[in-house]
Image (cartoon, rainbow, N blue to C red; front, top):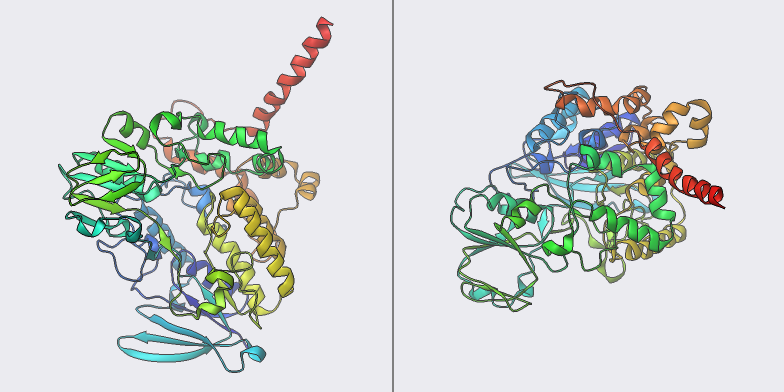
Length: 532
């Protein structure tokens, strides 16, 4: 019999999960709480409980070639970095082109997921849902949780003494939708993440004064990288990633800090991270340094306490007459429909093999998709996760033993502490993680074989952007257009900017840039030998 798989959420995680189920001959049923697809990217002018929420002006931090569904490139004329409405348009087109909508049950809340009494034998789940006040229950052979991790706001009010007596307005950033109503206001934004910086820079054009309070600082990156190319198409490549992970720590740390400081010296702007060599996710904001240097935004340390109208910072300075405090303090991850013991273990921490599978389940028929964070884009990551998870649920790709999975989890925790300063972060090293997942299903590019059989493609894969198409060259879900997509990715990237043609588009050639760098010590050695 065909296995039935329940998918929770019809956003950018749930949609590829549906497609992967269909590709493997499974029967998917997707439950979506709202009346439309898109998840976080489906904008609403109010924050709805239990759903992700974004503001009107959101743009993507990943470029289109690096964040597409791996077998579905963005149209040529789409901008490199796009407004949330364009991304929602793309997601909708993908769902329609792949004929996924008929597998989605809209306006359906999943209230409970529990093991069936014979779970140790069948691996089946009882799923209780609610729609229009009516409750239903159904049995499924597998479950893919695709509800994301930007749903439940982290609002640490207890960490800020005096907040209860503050008479101004205060709320989490998920409630922020736009700058309307902030003209002439004095605003304090707590948190130096992507949302906090976006909101602060937007408000700095209308508010009287904006202050960002940061506990530990952050690296600020621009979407526009070296020579004006998209940051991720230059930064996320296999060769640089190999160097970053294998050079001596001192050299790797120096190189990383130099790259982060290339645009401006963070020390001068009050933004320098406390632990600058850690690979914590940087903030992407093209405007923040300019707003700081123009005086419309100030950076302050953590808040020590609030008064009725002011904030006192740890350095003793005070921001007075505050109208609004916006807490851009991130999100927690929770699955209220699922027993905590399934995804959590010691110290009540989420424990998942490769961030996907609960290691202690008697049958590996439940997977969490999208509970990761990296410099790489989410869509290709969750697509690869879903491809693997579906094969595991189908029974054609067995997992390692429980002891091996637990050992891997412990090892990854140690590495996360070394790289990111927090063993429980959901952050990962993008290329390393993608290669690990791809290896389980035979989708990792074989560089030696490619070098021997298709050297042009091999060079582009190794020195060029690590784009999603690389993971559709082989394995389940192999896409015949992957090779051409890789070789033409720069054409699609530069196309939307060719609105005034002043010559041929200039593509980067990273391999030759590295050759130039390698030539420097060779020339110096030659000069030294010639003089002696």
